[in-house]
Length: 478
Image 1 (cartoon, rainbow, N blue to C red):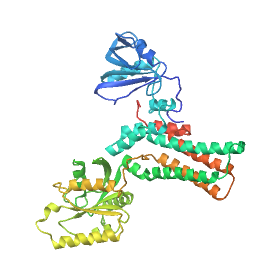
Image 2: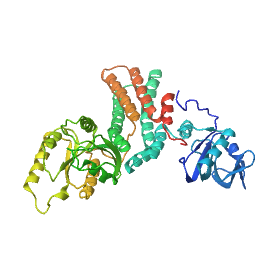
Image 3: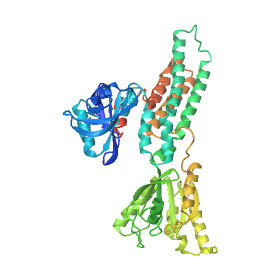
Image 4: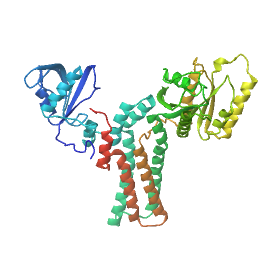
């Protein structure tokens, strides 16, 4: 049984809606049929909570059962059904001391409320019909957003754009199913002559709309979770320095000793609204050092999972066979070749040897059939070329070399993608039945299967245990 599967509709719940810890203000949220009466019993002010109109506030004091003062407070009353949970809701603003917050929460519980489970306020909003499941998930996505792109994608879902599209497609499926059933029951008034061709056109439209959404699934995941970006190169080419430069802080240990980095180090960095999940790796080379070898193996594993590779070479020391060997392992990857430590060599005139080895390396990368290749001269020490690197990452993203943030809807959850794939498969089966000349009554089975699959996205046909799992991942007070 999940953490919130036992929710009772008549429960009044309470929780801290702001972060736990020392702060100027803390907000407690109380929701349920007894919310107003419970807070009315602990609040003393010029107004009684029980007599307050909806969306009005009052200043006063919170007192315990014996009338002892606990804290000054402002209470805001919001009456059903026009609230977040669709129930009577009262918010209590207090000073943000942990002891004050704990004292008032204990008092609310003694008066008849219970502590809310994670996500329970949003689940009440879902059960009350105020939001659908995509909007509920978007609430947490907005809270968890780590970049502007992720926030924009979440806000589109929060505004109900995905819900509206899914409802449109489901209504078309329901209409066609109802028409077939009506024609089978009342053939005198509903004709099926030529209907298969019309149905085929409708299904093609729905499949096209599903395909549009599916094409955004990978991009949506990249925006929500961050583009997995791996910094690779042979030892001591400046990988950890580059990580520190992009992060703007000394996160990785940097020395002149080759092999300092022995394990992968992962950090999140926002580059112009694009979130990178940046992974610094051990230098990739053959080694007899068993500990370093483990780090090299982990670097190769990280490379296999990478969606973007920042491949560093040492401009001062030139090309090494390890660089060429590594280039041969980057087939199918989007690669930014960083010729690092450019500050250590003269840039007054081109050096034929340097140009030659860069050309050899880019030829090796092209021979490996990398997905895309950019070349930038950088210095992690001085910051030279970093602005160009950041702009290049953005350009690659918007040019669909990493994933393209489109202006339209974007699928950001795996379960949405799975439901769309299932719905499309059901529609494929309908068209197979049409092409095989089967009777119209066979169509309805798969039409309704597609209808149910799409319904899971917005929560219209969502199993209780899955709904509980989704809400249990929310933060407390939300």
